[in-house]
Structures are given as C-alpha cells and as structure tokens.
Length: 162
Image (cartoon, rainbow, N blue to C red; front, top):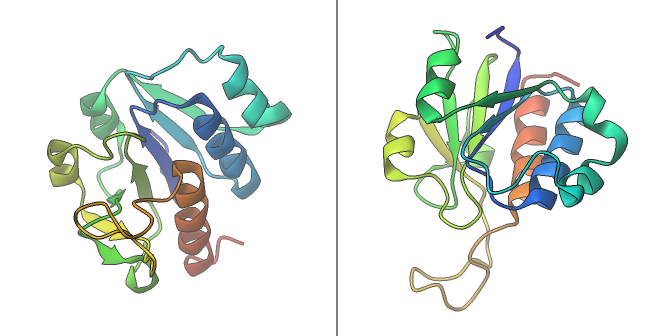
C-alpha cells in the first residue's frame, strides 16, 4: 500500500450511513479510507450511497478481507492509532506522525482486544459529560462518523495537511 500522510480505517463497520458519512469526510479531507471485512452491509446499500452522496468517486477506497490482511498491507513505517472511547491518550495530547492510520472500531463493540493490542497507540476523545463505568449518568460514546471527523480533523491540523 502506498503510504499517505494520514489514512482512516474502519474495523468491521456495521451501519451503512456511518460509513457513508465517513467516506464523505475522507473525500473532504483527502484521506484514503480502508474498510476491514466483514462489513455489516453491502457496498451497494442505498443508505451507504445516500450518506456518501455523489462523493464516492472522490474516495480512495481499499477493502481488506480481514484484519490480518489490513495489517499486512501497511507500510512498515505506518503507525496504527486505535481510536477508542476508553483507555487512550487524550486526543488533545496525542502526537500524530505522517503515515499514521486512524483505526476505528465497530459501532456496537468498538475495537476488539486482539485488534487494540496490535495498535501502536490508542487515543480517546475527551467527553466531559461521559457516562460512568456502569454506562449511566451521561453519554456512553460519540457516533462513529462524528468521532472519525473529530480525530481526522485534529490529526490533519496537527500534521499541517490543510
């Protein structure tokens, strides 16, 4: 795989509109998008296409048959930055590097422990009104497409990509 300054990867995405919105974000920021199968939908899904509007031709899209194929495709110098709602370096303190791949987990389960362990670093978006460890008293997580836009913009700004 050709190394780009920054990439976005989705681990087994499940919800077509989220993936379509993320594709639109990638098109807007000029970031390649990697989808790791199995997907929870068909790439022909009308909701996926609707969310991505007519921007799909502007998306540098790669599909990987599984997480092993994804990791095998990466340049040796690429770091995989797992994006998770827990246990990571706060996004505002994260030091991004050119060649980083921003890896986001499934909407329902996030990144599996096995996949997290393969990441070079984990980052977390600070949420001052987040739920407690019991899932009560606040927001449990951000929508995947929103989280992807926040992290992508922060990383790209820090790397002076725009």
